[in-house]
Length: 266
Image: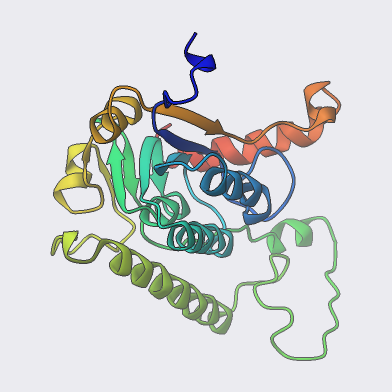
């Protein structure tokens, strides 16, 4: 009968955006990118006059640029709509995943959530000995001495390593600035805070990377009352994916994702 009585209001709405997976600019697999997350965030902030937006995050990180773009979008929408944003970490919010969490006004974790890894990593292979063993000669022609930087089919050069490290330090500085801007005085003086170290559950709270141990439903009920309702927004698989027509592509994406999670023992 309630639906037919116009002066009785439903409970307040909290929009929930689920953000799961590796952060990457490509379209392969269920990765997070600004392009894929933007429609979810726009709906979450604008549809149904929510009282708040909750981000449910489970990500080992990935692209620093995509992390920055998504984080900036979250802050822009939060400012435009004047809405509080809460982040709830599931298994892991590390590296770029923590960048996303730091875009929220408050960060809440499970007692076993892995949080942090505020650093930058670059990895690859050196294959020059392998191709030499099979009589393969690598031929590269460039206009510009830096165009063939860190070629995996040539011996490693000290100047290439130095150049990569300088680039990584710039990205790391941007990451640190973002975390300091968002967390401010909540951060502890721990010397390992920006070294790429990770913390679990309450330890993340102790160093200021999270605000407390808590879960989505009970915390939102505590903030907005027992009648709070949840509007959930999450990424959907493509039509081809749902019919099993992207098996090879999804298998590669799954391998990439499992490798990223494996760094944290997950």
